Length: 144
Ligand code: ATP
Ligand code: MG
Image 1: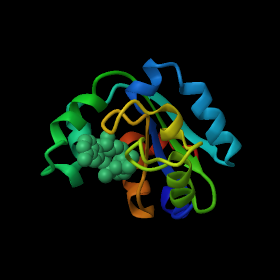
Image 2 (image 1 turned 90 degrees about the vertical axis):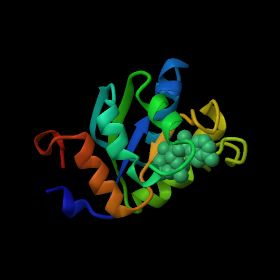
Image 3 (image 1 turned 180 degrees about the horizontal axis):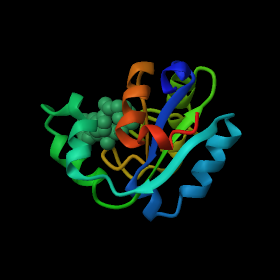
């Protein structure tokens, strides 16, 4: 059951810009080298409906429509990643939301296009990691 993995998983999405720019494998290598294992993985195109649900916390922000347009603009690679301290360690690996301030060597520093098109998503809390995993993957496809 996914709840048993509370604190040990995070939900990641390699975003359309990184896929289009050919960075999928370099990013996967960085994730692997940082000690994460892949529990579930799929390529998909995020629907508007799912995007709006996924980014609900930002619905009143000025950038919301850009965010929805971008995340639905092309294929993405979604993954449930497993590691102790997954959420915190993964946020460290991907770097700041804004690639111009993301630390050197982080995924966003290396591969993001802009603040909006910032290559990769990582959950921001253990609760959201579970919630987002269930948004993206059906129960039966979660290999836990
Ligand atoms: P994500 O949730 O995609 O992993 P994050 O948690 O680092 O990113 P959030 O604050 O959740 O950042 O913002 C969600 C997304 O909205 C960001 O990844 C970025 O693409 C976009 N975004 C955030 N802040 C801004 C902003 N000030 N201007 C434009 N886009 C923004
Ligand atoms: Mg976020």
